Image (cartoon, rainbow, N blue to C red; front, side, top):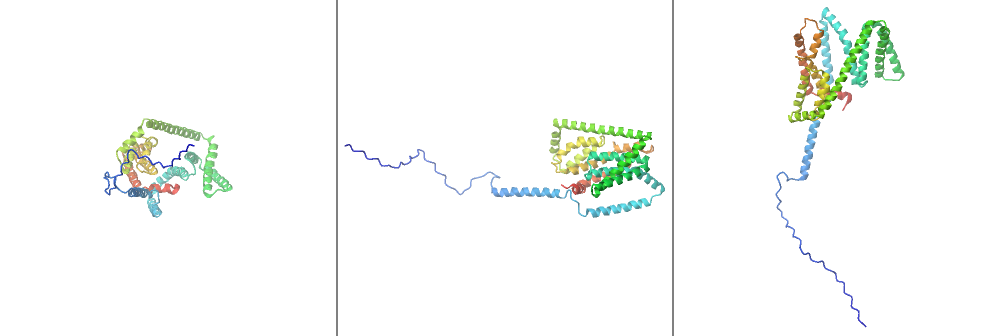
Length: 378
């Protein structure tokens, strides 16, 4: 018999030695490697420094804008005190008037105060959100017709206005409206009834009233069409100006001057002041103001403050020679012996007052921004 070979013992196979042994790790040294200038430092400390720096910038911005739009301290005391003092001075001035001056004052009140009240009403209904701008324009047109009919037929207008007030209050009371709504309903009812019913009644018997109404309608349509075409032209101008890179060119030019916020405000207001000589306010607002508006955020200028300063600046531009629009308007209705130089001399104090108001508005922006903040908030 053949003997079977004994099984081989299982021997663990040792790993084959690598042909290329690993390079030995460099010995640890206590000396630090040289670093570039500005790269050394603890990253945690750097992060804390950056965070602290960001907090400082944010707090500075908050401090710079925290006072804007808030009611100044003791504002109402100073306001009502100044109003009382001015009222007493005005009463003293009226008390010193003679008969001729009182007659002139009476004519001035009769001719100016109704239009002034109508203007205030149109602005108030927009300010308090009662009507939109278009609806307030309709209220202004209705008020103008009311004044025109009252100048011709005052007795009939008063009676029909009283009836309209009663009807408006009754309808508002029936609907359960509050006091403010009742006042608005009474005003609209009295104005509408006092205008439409006497106007339509006397329109068929008064050729003069028909002629005046026709002339007013055509003049209103002409002015409205001119303003609408002006908006169309300004929109086309702005679009072409932006497509050809004019807006970005002006932005780069202004930013390259490295102006401060004061310098930007001065430059913008000076340009608008100079444009107020040959141009009307509509062209300036709808064509040139959109050029400055995108730059307001860069210079941290409040848009409401900028718009208010533009409106006040235009008042000064209309009073400044050599192309003062208000002076020529006044010359057209003044007597022949009043010269243009006399009108310019009389307007100079008012122009200086307007310029001083611009300076005060920029130094103390809270005087301008507290009313929008008080009415609408932020």
